[in-house]
Image 1 (cartoon, rainbow over the protein chains, first blue to last red):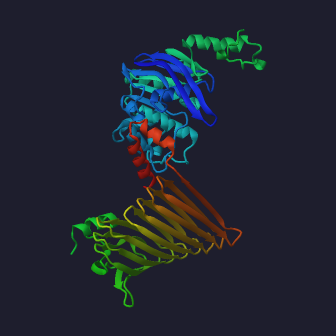
Image 2 (cartoon, rainbow over the protein chains, first blue to last red; image 1 turned 90 degrees about the horizontal axis):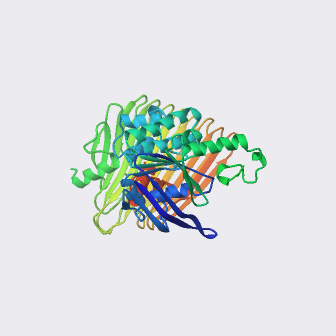
Image 3 (spheres, one colour; image 1 turned 120 degrees about the horizontal axis):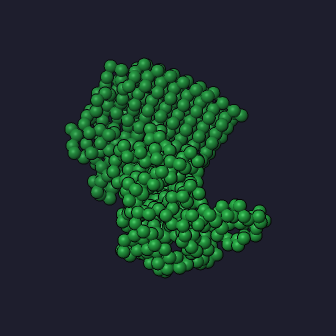
Length: 251
Length: 305
């Protein structure tokens, strides 16, 4: 359903141009759940933002159901059924949870709205009429961010580190919610995560490092690799490569 | 007596679509046109100068007073209104000025509103300013509000000015006595070449007096805004000013804070911020399917609500 072909991205920073993505290639199939993982700063969020249109690729193409969306605007991609839950969500002075969820779903708040909040571990009664301002904790804005994606009818939902700020009790509920969204609404889901519980959901795991896809693999292989590292790697503490699977520790 | 333009102005400034219930006084082009009093609220025309005295009996509950002013031709209008809010009463006062200036001349409304909120009383005062007109005539508003809040009394002020007024100078002065409290919410949007200046001085005179000013403004095009928010604590009191402005285009905004304490138990805080619409807010709304323009309007509407 989504094809990312040879995508490259160069951004202008304070110290001149930086190539943040190069030759990114992968395909997402209909109705599957994918997890994207890899080291910090490796290009996961930038890849997700390039799919949403927040960054326009400097090379390559992106196709959604065969339609070239490479140069489409953010709102056009949103209307075509792509959604992105930000890693660090925005707060809005004067906009209530109810209003943001109504903008997301395109209709008035209903029983579904309450369900979406319940799915992220928030009580609708307590939250619907609160403004999404500085009085919200990091965990609360994160949950509301996820709810704005649940409220939409999407072909492709991207979640950027949804576990950040979510306690373990709610994690169980969150993974169930992703499964429900996938089965009930046939949404293809791409989750950026380092969490084992979330990796468990993945049909395929996309490894991103150094600005490109280094490997597309199965969760069994990744989880196996993590446990091998945990049990085998005696040098882990002082391993110069940080003892990470993707760092290529060859023990 | 009231024509279509008058009714539109009334709807904008006083949320009134018809003649209101309760006490009211409608002033049009410098003349009183309609008035109603109730058993508890009296309205009397001043003898020495233009304006009215509104007298609310002690213990009056859940009543309202509407005192809209309409200017539908070019002129200069000046009023002095005095409000006596009796002990332990609880009332809503809605003032507002709508100017429809179709001429190329100047239309100006200056008002001095003086309030005495007696012991234990609560007053909510809503003041809306709105201007329209197709001519090149300048619309000017210079409201001055003086409020005395006595022991255990509460004043809540809501002051709104959205577009329409070319030049506004708003002076507000409040004195708070023992255990009195004040909440001011100010909403301002200027555009084109408009200028708006708001000077608010709050004197916290008695122990346990508290004051909160929440000011939010948007400056668009080449408009200019100046805020002087001044809090002075003379006793064991609490005061908090939050002044937030969104600046766009070639607009200019000055926010001049002043807090002064004359007692070591006074706690005063001033927060002021001026900035563009946060880009992450725009991006989030666009990722929910809004165009940039729609996202901008949604953010500004929420901000000024």
